[in-house]
Image 1 (cartoon, rainbow, N blue to C red):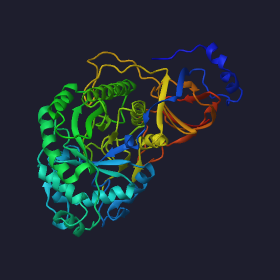
Image 2: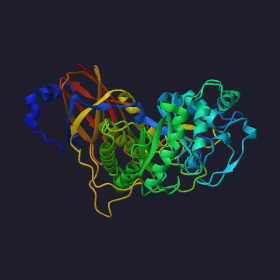
Image 3: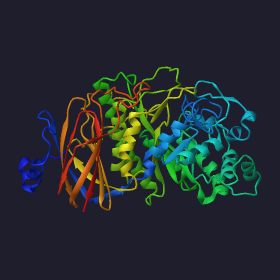
Length: 535
């Protein structure tokens, strides 16, 4: 799909000559690779749902305890027990939806243990993550209060693995029934007279693995059973999400959908796909980085194929496709800051942008995407230094998401560009190579969206050794002016640390935009968003 335009074709438009007269000297390096692109402003793909930028929080490591919750008596600055810096930074970022309490933790979580006076809540062992004693001080009311503080819509993962249909049905009543029932009155007595009105409910998590090691037919049978009682109490006000595959497992989806057979209405279908890494987070080589980046075309292929298979059962697309868990999962050692604590580097930011670009390109096929996880765990947008520490750092991945905020609620439009290629053969959900076969290095990535007189374009240069000069034609509109921002560091392992929290941050960047052209230089390892005024 790479486009090859001759110099004569560009000069024929007249735009190249006019731009050259006012571009700053030295903007384009003689050693840069020249890239061509075309944006079709009138060829819409679908809505860039804000939900593509959603997140996930689990009782794992220091994500919840220490990251979100420090307790009301903590010396860490807090708002009724919630780390204040976390609240402030997440409000700035804007988290559309937050999924909780897992992950694997969800299928061993019993919601009644997390309500009522904190000192009376029972304690149990977290069997999935370290076998520490969970004191349930962060439960349903705390999660809802946190969602309200940061402006996120809640998404609950129900317990299918060790729970019952009644337990989930009662949780829905406790959260959503207005008043008058024993459960709704109990909610009021616990400090929330108004219903929570929780819309999104996952029926189990990873039922193919930690959620019970079920076959797809068994998982679909459990969905039918749990959904029956969830519907009886929640009606059409609950959006029920079924457990889809690990990666692009088409056999799982066929087995699940054949068994479901229309006997229980499913609103959403969730797949998980992690982009695994072979080295510790701050020790990546370019070769290991490229292997990880080359997983993203496989994620895109998985979305395309899973959506097509769902369409064969659901031609009206009444079932939304969720990428409930995604993100880079590097080689991790035990850390004093908690399990799966992972530093986010410039490589991580580029990876996030590769994912967010493909969500825009496949906007018509997706409903929600939740990166894993919110704080301290895996590809987190924030890092803290433990329950008693006062530090909170915005990671490079945080800034990558910030660069994509302008796309939200716009219509994604088609873009063709050098570097675009058909996805390669897909792998499993937690990454991996191609059986020892050499892979080409990744190339330019981009996506575009438009609403009325504003168009947003995000470019990603995932190469560590090549600057890219991008000459992009814009068709269907006339470009009046543009401005750009960039996230960039030539060191693939550069990171925002507690000692240097602003090492990699968003900066203004030069762009030339006029008529039917925009031109921009992308230094190696960079993400740039251009906002255009068009007519």
